[in-house]
Image (cartoon, rainbow, N blue to C red; front, side, top):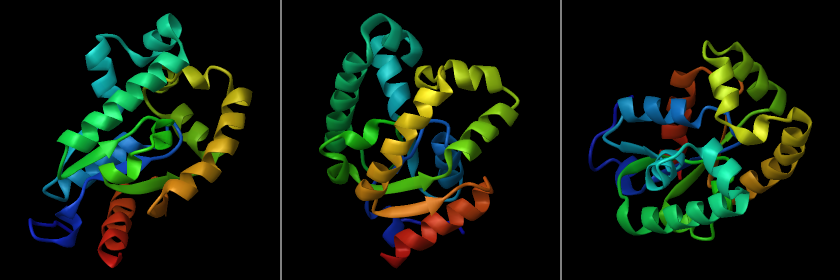
Length: 180
């Protein structure tokens, strides 16, 4: 399952999109293990720029300010990042230039599966705490219901990740990229 330079896989960046908590970072790390890609996380970049956590950015400056930072990050990625797996925040898919950054892969899962996996994680409280939009699960489900349709429209490839078998998911992503 390892890939090397010259494989079709390495011609572009890979952007992982999907709802918060779906496992974009986990899948990115698994993809890196099995390829010559590098990996970055847009939320990590934003936290570095602002020198504060996403939750704090939301509480201090609001969601609109955070979305402006995502836009800045998207332009930076488009102009500076190559041969990289980019794990994105849940709302990053709205960036106008997303297709210019790389191949967009939507990690699809039901809302209930995402919440169940987050609750079963060893660091469950931390996972919920770092996602300000998950404070109210009823409101989060409304956001999810809107976004899932939009994720599918933006995606080049859709991979269902509900069973959380990272090796199978990684294999499927590689196969689908090489089939295109």
